Amino acid sequence: MDSVAVSAAIGLAVGRPTLAQTARVAFSFGAVQAIMTLLGLLAGHLIEPVLAQVDHFVAFGLLLFVGLGMIRSGFRGEDADFRVDPTRGARLLFLSVATSIDAMAVGFSMALLGAAVLFLALVIGLTTVVFSGVALQVGRPFGPKAGPVLEVLGGLVLIGLGVKTLGEHLAS
Image (cartoon, rainbow, N blue to C red; front, side, top):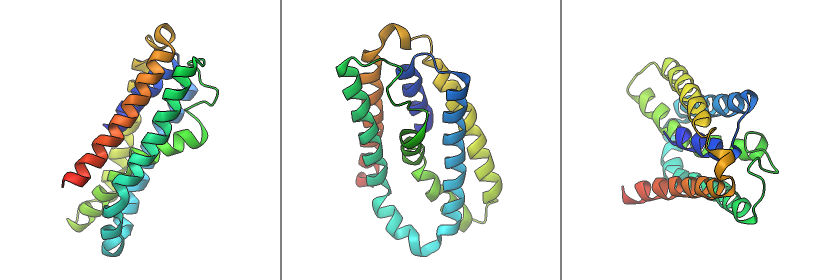
């Protein structure tokens, strides 16, 4: 669901995402979700205690970084199409990783339970592709009308997700 929320925020900020942008976001989020699930399978007992101690800080930091960039662009009144396309490069990679860190824990947990992790990784990846692609397009009709305001709101959504992730892990 984090990937869906971030995809919707990107769709709002971009305004009219192209088919190529939608495919990049959806497949990036889906592939990273599946890969992180498989990495969880490989992580084993040695890495899990260390990972569990820092995963929420990594997710928070990445979401905060990208969210603040979106807010800055919105307040500067920069074009909602972004100077740096959020559906490419480092921004997309940061968002993909930040929204999929929990998938590693899922893969690890499922492996301990003897579940078919390869199948689960495929299902998780494909589900993320579909839902992220749809969410990105949902923002399409609103983006051009609201421009910078929606970019600021999208940045706040990302920061909110980071705070939520951090809060959940610190509370448990």
